[in-house]
Amino acid sequence: MSSDPTVPSDPAPGDVGTPPPAAAMPLTRAGALWSALIAGFLVLIVLLVFITQNTGPVELVFLTWTWSLPTGVAILLAAICGGLVTALVGTARIFQLRRAAKKSLAAQR
Image (tube, rainbow, N blue to C red; front, side, top):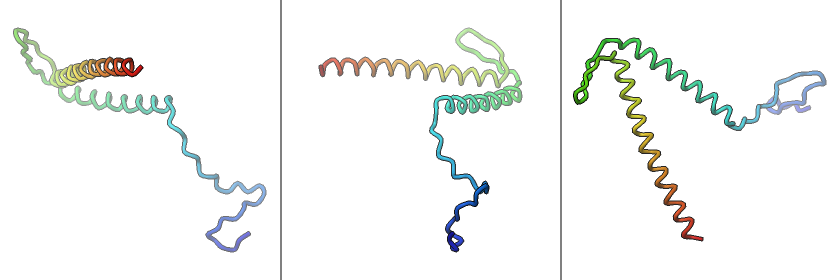
């Protein structure tokens, strides 16, 4: 045993001592899924609070259609429509890049 207090000594038999530091756990798909689910539920809770606090009606007009919705629901629908447009454009771009990659791979062979 060392008399230097900065150097840890070996534990006595039967002495539990402090556990060794835990090794870093690798990120797994299940862990990422749980993290995404928790984040998604937190976003849903925030959206629910937003919608319930913005219940005043707003009149919407598009071309010849006119309808009334609560403000929170109208803003949520606008955000969803914007997300869908973004997803469609992104999907089209992915297909375009895949097609170009296949043509480039076929030309190399």
